Image 1: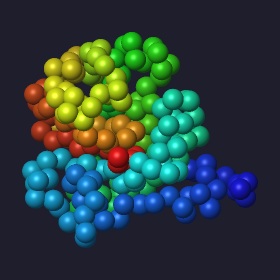
Image 2: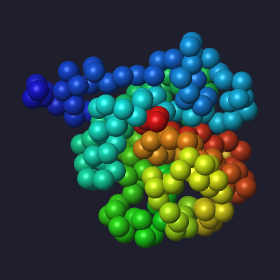
Image 3: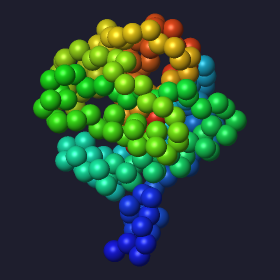
Length: 207
């Protein structure tokens, strides 16, 4: 359907209304629950904000952003994620900075850009939270999409190197999709070892 007027999310009203929201997800870990509540296994961890299922139109948007550099799809994903932040942090303080999940040098050259970094910059524009740049370096390794769940879960914090002193105590990691959580946990451990007290995770979709 054509846009009758410009929308901030660049999506027609029909498609925007069709986006499925995870209204019964645990606000700490993002897992589906019968009723909204904090999972016992999530106690003491940072918030995981992954409000939409990685399926149908949401999966298509992530694929378009990730592999086809479709910034219109990325704008829609950023709008979906940004609108849930005030609800998730209504009784909490916002992160001091956003840290996009880095790609290794080879992966970024092959893909042409880092979709997580682009998503973080779009969130910065909408939420006025600064993005930290070139704080973390990722060592080259097998692509996560080619690895089994067990192999993904074995990802070590050694895969990431913090390049300088970290002045923030509350950081939010930004990525496009939350799958096993292995990447986010490894990066969280690396940031924790560098002195960050709390690490949240922001992803547009949850697989």
